[in-house]
Image (tube, rainbow, N blue to C red):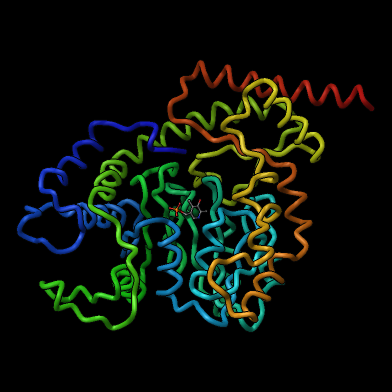
Length: 405
Ligand SMILES: *Cc1c(COP(=O)(O)O)cnc(C)c1O
């Protein structure tokens, strides 16, 4: 998963270019910055690398989602369909623009179940926001078809799947807009940062202004810029962009290692017939940041998690079902509508209603799922050792259960 594991002279060099001039801001100061424009360079590199027409950097992935939603005109009165399994940022962003996050069940892809999406559509549905969780993708053809049929926006939260593809196209560049996060644990990092990617010029122009107080960025003089609409400050800094610029040049190196390590470990787990794996709609496009695997029952899965913990090999393995950040089951603050600022009572009621629905279909998937994060630092020897220990744990639990019967 993480580019931070391979911090190098390349990152240091890019950051030093910025430290030399002392111009840490991405806009203005044209003379003193001496031709150093790391944010602009990174945006161009993103367009080149992922094959989108436009890229707007932001201060975080959450800010990128909020920006994309505003630019897409999502707001009051709108519903956004998004999965029950995601990072909290996905629904935070929907709330930040005053829309209702309509959480919908996931299937064995660990992403939106297209049939559940269909059932959740109302006259107020404005957008579908699949989240390409844990390095792999949603069934985009099915979701695109639903969007076309119902005239809905497709916004991809690709924050966790940098470098993944679907039928040859980069995840995050397939919908009306898509986002990456470059926070510290993502496939490539800026320390903090994010990007809105789009092929629509109108969405880009709005994103560009929205992230910088509505500036139209048409003039040479920042002070003379016009403000065609109200924006906020979701800017990235030159220091952060500099880190990202080094990382994107190393992305292929990261992904190659990730895929190799993923393949080696997955082969070992696959030798156990009781283990199954997440369904990947386009296997060639898996970025391989995680191996997500299932056991036949919740009971067995819990026993495996406990045994891994007992043997000290749980770190790096995620049982999302009990996790506070990634699954509806533990999002009590959302279920009770716990915001600091008052929400309109109608909005709050709708948000709580959606968050308190029955997610039994997701539960049957998530209660049996363990995701193993892939490190770029593992040697083949370490992978073998790790795999043997994991296989040992699963076999032990399975045989204990057989005896107990
Ligand atoms: C990391 C992440 C985000 C938010 O990114 P930040 O840069 O941490 O704000 C959004 N969605 C998903 C699925 C993520 O994993």
